[in-house]
Image 1 (cartoon, rainbow, N blue to C red):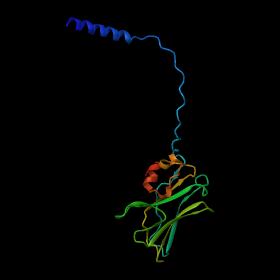
Image 2: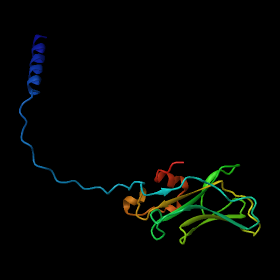
Image 3: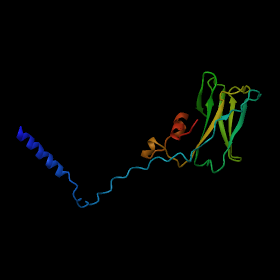
Image 4: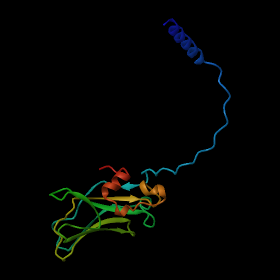
Length: 183
């Protein structure tokens, strides 16, 4: 038992001296540069979106077509040659709530919603027309919003492989998440 205690003390002394703070050795040579990863996705600073705009499509029109302007877009905001313009309608009433991209045919099939960008006045207009030429009777949507994605703004997913995402086939929820668009 006495030898066991001596052996323990010897191990303890060796470990204390082995951990002493001696002089540092020479610095080794610089290693090779590792492979560089791809650049991360661009931020959302260039993406432009409107607030939700209350619909002005009225119940009292006697025409099979109605429309109203939802924005005047300057050339700094929207370049028709390179940028993507998306417009959404939001329904807040009854049992068919949701956000839908325009163009859109409502659930009854008799109202068609679209948008038009007039390059002469830089005005964005939402339009509704009936498919059977009867007067427009109110509207399916309560609000509208536009989103402008500049032509040079890449984002997420396939972009790492050099492919541009197909924004026009994404849902509003996907676009809002991708570009951090608040409600």
